[in-house]
Image (cartoon, rainbow, N blue to C red; front, side, top):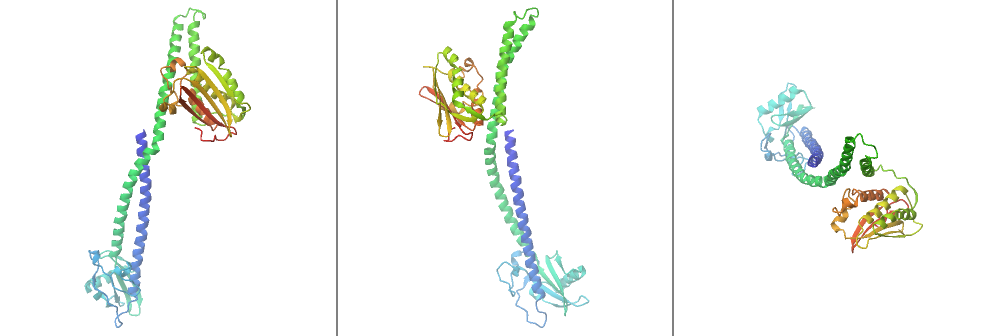
Length: 436
């Protein structure tokens, strides 16, 4: 799937840019053709204005008309034309005057390499067309007619220069476009990899998420099915006699419900649909009440639970979610406290933010594992994960709650202690100080 997505990205980019480049080439060729035709027509109009027999004619260099060697078409100096300027001077121009019967009475074919018979055939073709201007395919000529006192004057101009200009610019554009497309192909492949990388990571995380969720659901389902089979195998027993298996079914059902609720919360958070009932929350009271609810857990586990909560810290937020956030962090700290087994909960105002920290003593978490602690189903100590309970979703939910309140959360570990720090904006905006 990811490979196909990359290919589609590259194909769409190449197609889009290729279409733009093709459009630019067409426009450039169109304007070049129009300019070349305009130059040819300018030469024809000047030829129409050339003096006839009995008047002094400018010096014209003899050249071939319609020659295959386009470089052989030199330029003759004409009034108003700058030789070598790339304008109409590259076109061989000649003319002829005919009487009412179509007979040629005047011409200047001595200026070009063309015979009288060829000229007569060209004139006859023009007169037969009945058009004032047009083109002749073989040889490549444009013509212009005008009635004069001496008769009908027909001017011809060699249009091979037009074809040469179009061919030249076409070849150059083709080269530029080919080079641009090759460069674009390499850039598109690189950009496709960069653009698809987040999708690839999300896809891989999704696959891992589904696999982990399926694994976690498989265990309680197996227990429920096994207990239900035992109950069905003894239909004559009383409820009291089957209580052991019924309790197992109920416990595993509750465990599954807890897992499904956690997954549903994360799914809603991903879709930005998790309900956040904003209101004024006394965070100090929330942290104290949530921490005190773990005193029995801490006592049974031989854990010293300390609280350092500054009074009067309040913020805009969802009281239920903030209470869940504190409970997740304290529960996680109690589960993995070792050594002296001390869990410390701190809360204080820090500028426009509230800083909540939950610290526990225990083995240091390797630095490379710290960024993964908030991933779903991730456990840094997998050997004790099952005995400690839970599904590895608590810290993922804690991060989701923090993000919904525009805050930041991070974990630090070292010196025999691990600290989870949460920075929450007191006013409901984004947390400052660059806390992550």
